[in-house]
Amino acid sequence: MGRFKEHFKILRKHPIFPVLAFIVLASIIKENYPFSHFSMYSNPKKSVRLAYITDEKGEPLPILYHTGLSTSKVSKTLNRERTPLENTAKKAGRDLDASDVIDEINREAGEYVLEAVRALSMKRRKRELTGPIQLIEMTILVRDGQLVEDRKLMAQLPEVTP
Amino acid sequence: MRLSFACVIGYMLEDARPFALETQKHANGLANLVDLTWLSDDLPWESPFNNPGLWDIFAAVTVVLLIFYVVGRGLWIVLPLLVLVFTLPHSLQNSQGYILHKFQLITLTILAQAVVVNYAKWFRQKRENPLSADMLRGWVVYYSKGMIAATYVTSVVSKLINSKGLWLWKTGYMAVDQQKSRAQEFYRSLDPAFSGIDPIAAWMVDHTWLTRALFGTGFFLEFAALAALHSRKWALLIGISLIAMHRSIAAVMNLDFLNHELVVLIFFVNIPFWMMWVGAKIFAPSTLEPSGRV
Image 1 (spheres, rainbow over the protein chains, first blue to last red):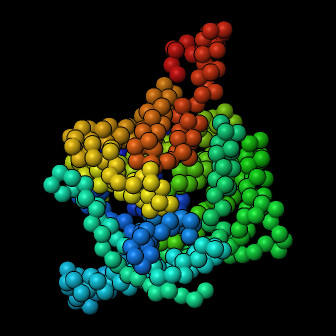
Image 2 (cartoon, each protein chain N blue to C red; image 1 turned 90 degrees about the vertical axis):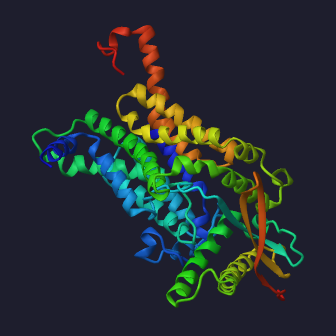
Image 3 (tube, chains in turn green, purple; image 1 turned 90 degrees about the horizontal axis):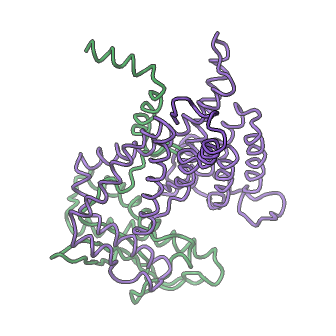
């Protein structure tokens, strides 16, 4: 311990010490602008998900054209809405692996995303999403040595009168 | 260096999206303490730039601050104000349910400079060995480089923590992230050029160990970013390597971090210094360090 204290004293006087201290600070503060722990791709997974919008027939709609949003923002918003719903369900003692619980959470989070997307489209003249729209979540994974994309309907909204 | 960094800072103004945001449902940063949605309030006059909210005012303030920054006047107040001017809108931007990582490095570099300048003004000037103007300039550059290097090493720390030390092994799964980048491009605007399976992702599935080796190179390069603080030669080497890494990520994964590359180019690669050094080497070698240390 004595030697550690000695080395720490030497390190503290070195110009690089504030830089090392910042690394520790940023790792603790995490994501609070302008601080970040730059955790992009920090935990690669065997499967990833992304969400996109379609019409009632399942044909994808160009989300950027209709709303100004990128696909990644749609996916992140869905995840952000889903997490607190999952936490609430868990606290209520519900089984998060049960298909009815999953479907309910997905529907609620998905409807929020669709409402938000539709609201944004209403600000873009002649690009409004007034027809029936669906939110599809796609899971990308490797199966039998091949990349595959599994799709699942999360939520849908009916037509609205502008 | 101040002029080129000022140009990069000014370029951040090009993104006016935060000034169109009317909610902060997922508060981030300063938005946790104050409501920042006033940034999207309408101006009392018609904007000549056609940008939303109070962009015009923020742009005007930024330009004035950058003029003072370039001429080096009042840096002790100019730099913290620049940090604030960019922290307000980008905290609001990051309060929408997703985090953008485009501007943090620039704001943090300004913050590092603000801390150094204010430390020198309020603490060192009162001592018997205050910093000279040259020493202060050297400190500002050192800690700008230090901040840039720290962000790369922080990224490495995140990788190690979040993957529980298995990041290098898990890069074998990067093919799915590669395919996700392609799919995101396709569903963004239905560009047929991005439909189907990504050939690079397919290659990664067939060459898992080579994928790990390639991503591992970037991992160790990020960890080695601190070496840029050792000398200008190391800064040049690390800088060129980091820019090459970002270019290859942009080409393969369609992920652009141009702001990071520009900041690294200014502070690590430092072209003006090397041009002067080569010039001095050819025309006035006696002006160079006797030890030859750069």
